[in-house]
Length: 184
Image (cartoon, rainbow, N blue to C red):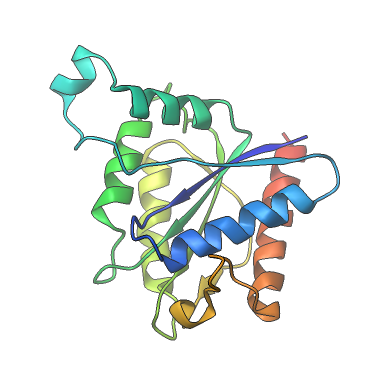
């Protein structure tokens, strides 16, 4: 059984990135082997501040750090805000990267994908997110790039993505993550 942590880099209630994350969670939990998916809530992370860190992590942050520390892998879905990850995602990764060399992200198999209302699906944000994660010590999962374009129109009222072509790409990403976990 693999435990996979999922992060959406968007806070919006009807976020297409969160719909992708929810769909990935459903795929993971539908795979044989009793795998578990858990969404890491990043909404209540304070802005990264070493003074706050020194004083002790706020409860929502400590709970999220525990989720990632207890995971066998991480999947991050990022929006592209002017070609870069959202501030909330960067802030979350900054918090999760602490302490350097011994953080919950250190050596954690991690996959990145993106979703956007544009045709390119935010593909231009992925190298930036991968670079941030590499700097945090995460281990990149080898997989095909997944960038969900026209994502707003693909989100169902239930908050999932059901387009067969997109679901197929998400299934391949999940399979690559589960293979990376099995190879450890």
